[in-house]
Amino acid sequence: MQSTFPLFPQAASSVASEVDLLYFFILAVSAFFAILVSALVVFFAVKYRRRHPDEVGHDIHGSIALELLWCVIPFVLAMVMFFWGASLYFTLARPPADAMDIFVVGKQWMWKVQHPSGVREINELHVPIGRPVRITLGSEDVLHDYYIPAFRVKMDAVPGKLTTMWFTATKVGTYHIFCAEYCGTQHSGMIGQVIAMEPQDYEAWIGGGRTTGTAVENGERLFTTMACITCHKTDTSGRGPILSDVFGSTVDLQDGRQVVADENYLRESIMNPQAKVVREFQPIMPTFQGTLSEENLLQLIAYIKTLKAPQ
Ligand code: CUA
Image (cartoon, rainbow, N blue to C red; front, side):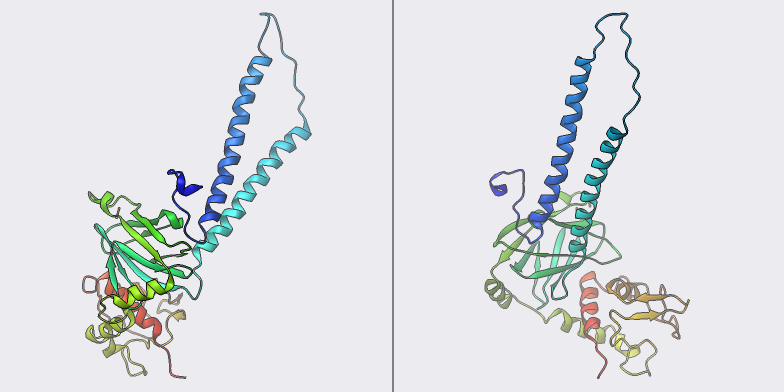
């Protein structure tokens, strides 16, 4: 029904119909009470109008039953909206562990995409249907917002940090991508297309793309060329911390704090190494701000995530 009605985007992801259902529920509740209240205002205004100049109204002594009714009903409705919305929010905020990783970098005024195999594209995003896709978003310059209406997902691309969103496309087709955050004169032109394909078509497409190595391989190369490797060794002889198994671990800092080494921690430690210095290490690491592009940074992080201590 929705695809024939141009006010609504198509529903082409696993969460789309759930988001719509919640939206329509809230809309229906709001519409019902708005109409009820306006109709009663008019009805009572007419029914209890003053008919003679000397007419005086009766006193009202209240009604506990009525008071309870108009407290309990809105409370229940508000709680339904809250818990329903919160549960959907948690679904949207937690990518499944087996999701495929795609990197997207916003830049005035385009979207640069990098697939796990290293294939890149601009302003287009090819994805297989039926498989969760986790998008890691960065920004090269200002605030942008990656918005795919047909999937009902939307996330800010924030300069200086990484954000994530995820979806599972359910229907083959081509859908809009918009930038949903005003980002300069060409903001309205910062658009693109998601192309959702059958898994075998996606494999064929990705196989035909040109690549200079996977994201992890490129990250490994950067790890050497940027000389990370001279300080971050696999044994304790390095001047920097060992990075094996660091991703997802809890790190003790010089100032006594503890942080979980997630993607944003790794990003900050590369761009602004003095911000969180690991305990028992010196703040000697140079910043890579301005040296590494956001895409290189994502490759480096992808590589660091694969580093495992020998068993
Ligand atoms: Cu990028 Cu608006």
